[in-house]
Amino acid sequence: MRKKKEEPQVKFHEQIVTTGQLAAILGKTTRWINELDREGVLKKESRGKFVLNQAIQDYIEHLLGGKEDSKKPKLIDYKTEHEKTKAEKAALELEQYKGNLHAAADVELLLSDLILTTKSRLSGIPHRVGATCENETAEFITKEVTREIESALSGLARYTPDQIGGGGDGDSS
Image (cartoon, rainbow, N blue to C red; front, side, top):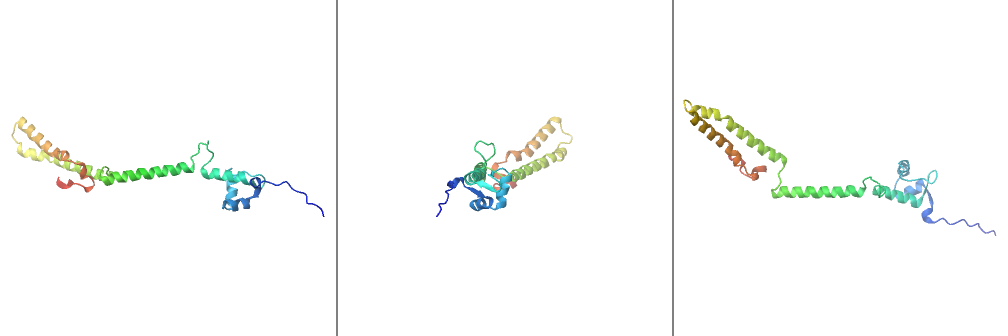
């Protein structure tokens, strides 16, 4: 009987695998493996063949977002940014719940109401003053106009932040 010629034993991690075998190991399709090869993520040893350990390391590096020294953002960076954004959102919601932060729509509504009310009061001054100041001195007219303006603007002075969002008695105008 003739002895078989011993072939050099290839270490497991240096084995050459086909596209189908690599796809099965990584749990992906051969199409996915070929796409990664076209993108330069995986490097072929020869047509349809990959060195197992290098292919796995390249795939893991791809999943992590690239080489450590590359300028490309990594998946972990995106996750960290996402968690940071969620924390900021929670902090803003808490401040709004405590009444320290108000929605822009609520502030806009209150300010619009204050402006329209003040405009209406200021617009009514000529009619009110005109009737009472007929044939009066300039000094009397000045005092009367000043009093009416101060009265019209007093609504702005009575503004309180708790009127925003329906928390106060903003309808007392």
